[in-house]
Length: 333
Image (tube, rainbow, N blue to C red; front, side):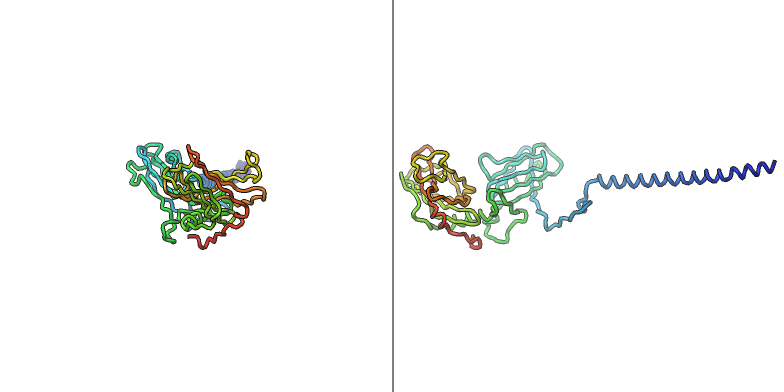
């Protein structure tokens, strides 16, 4: 009997050891699976959680603070409108959320009106604006029951007289229609031509009905032409401008057709005015793409009076364009 018991124990002992080892392995496997699951969940949470702004996964380079464009702080409300006056025409506006609405003020091209679309919205939003002369402005916007500033003027640093007073949130933007030329430099050239008010050309112009329309100068820089014009009203009756048209036409054709004309559209018009008062004069600088006129054609610039017949026109030949004065941007002021 004892012999049988010993034999049974000898036979069952390996099975018990194997079962114990299996249970131990199973326990370890459960712990390992638990650890792996917990690790996966932790990694998934790291992937899904919002970025802290300090780092990004993958190949990326941190943006340093010297590359940051500090925004202006702006308060808006639901019952009042905030107006922002920019130094030049507004070309682009982007709103960060639907909590605010914005648009140009009436027929004004450089005044932006903005207000809250939702009363007492809590989340801060932003706005970006690009202007005609290539400046970039950015704003952080929050709701306030009574905004401190309802009318804001964005100072034109190009005219403040202090060379170093350039706001670091006003970045230069290149615009497609000006090609490789800097919009800011175009603005400065137009301003300089207008302020200097020199007359290099004395043989191009027209004078009828007490109105004199002159081309005072032709300038060129980096693929663009600048035409300095002046309207003198020698009468006592105001001259209301309807529109000004530039076109290249055949010299020998008396009556032009649409096919025979090539209209030139100015890229910029500095100090474009709508009326010249009696006994007064007004000047405008037009920026156009550089053109070359064939020998059998010429450039015609026409000035039309609104609800009147005192229209003016003069002719510019290709030789006049070839003698355009080269602009030295170092002397632009």
